[in-house]
Structures are given as C-alpha cells and as structure tokens.
Amino acid sequence: MKTMRTSVFLATVVLSLSAFAPDHAKADAILAFTKLANGLDANDANDAPAVPAGSTVVWTYRVENIGGVLDESFAFGDITIIDDNGTLDLFDDFSPMFGVVESGNSDDILEPGEIWIYEASGTALAGGLLNTASLTAISQMTQTTVQLSDIAIYQDPNDLTVPEPASLALFLAGLGGLGVAMRRRIRSIAP
Image 1 (cartoon, one colour):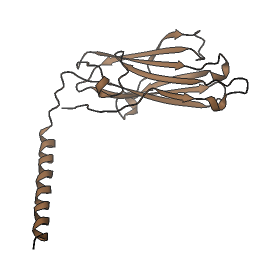
Image 2 (cartoon, one colour):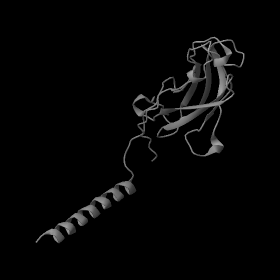
Image 3 (cartoon, rainbow, N blue to C red):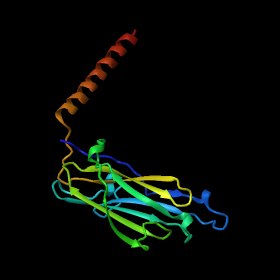
Image 4 (spheres, one colour):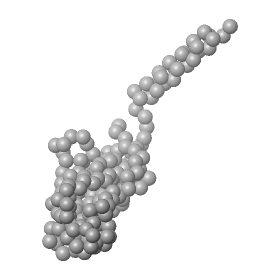
C-alpha cells in the first residue's frame, strides 16, 4: 500500500528584482507562482484536499506579476510551466494548458498587475500525491531566466495508514537487536 504522509511547507515563491530597478523606478517587481490542488494552496498535508482515488483532481497554476511599476522593465515573457507529475521520471512530466488572463491585456507579456491562470486535470491516485510545478520566465529588462517552483498535495480519504508487515517486522527486529546490544553492554560493564 502506497501512502503519502509528507509535511512540507513551501510558501508561494517570490522573486524580488529591486536590484535591477532603473534609476527612474525604485519600486519592486515581484513575480509570484502558486500551484493549487482542487482550489486549495495545499503545501502541506494539513491543507491537502481529500480526493478519492479514481476521481478527478484539478491543478491550477497562478502566475502573478505583483510589481508596482507599469513599465516594461518589470515585465516577463516566454513563460513555461512544467509539472513533474509526482515522479522523478521526466517522461511523464506535463505542461498545463493556458486558461485565462485573470487581469491584464493578453499580449503574451506578463506586466505588473497581471495574473495568468493555467490548468490541468488528472485522475487521483490511491494514497494521494505530492507534485512539483516549475515555472520559467524571461525578464524583459535583463533577459535573464527566472525559475520558480511550488508544490501541491492531495490525499486519498480512503487511504488507511497501516504499516506494511515487512516494515513492522524490520522495526521489531531493530528493537530486538538494540535490546541485545544494550544487554551485552550492561554485562560487560558490570563488575
């Protein structure tokens, strides 16, 4: 039985570009990236939505330029998102579909104040899943690549966390070995 009990906290990743601010603009440009599972920012197991195995899980990817300067200096282009699908295998990674421009002008440049939404869906696995999404964007001012990531977790409410027999046997064997070692040590120290 595969179980997912991970307690990870990874807040929305934020990048400040104030060091690159031109002299005429001293405000910060901030790029924020958040991944949601069934509408929840589930970065740890306590916040994870309950998604029964076999049902649909929807991932939403929110990209926002929180910059305060309406200036192309703080804009981002060539935005791509790759989701690892909860595995180390690169062959099952996927890119979510661009959904809507929540705010902005739809010109393919993420300018200050704009919010872009991407979406993907899949079938929930037994035991739940923790997967990571990575965002890559190009700063229009510096032409440098910016990379951010965020995680999302969902859990199977029908998953009972019962230890596997082999794990339990290994644990008990370790305790027994520790007891034998302690007993031998006590005998060798005793006068």
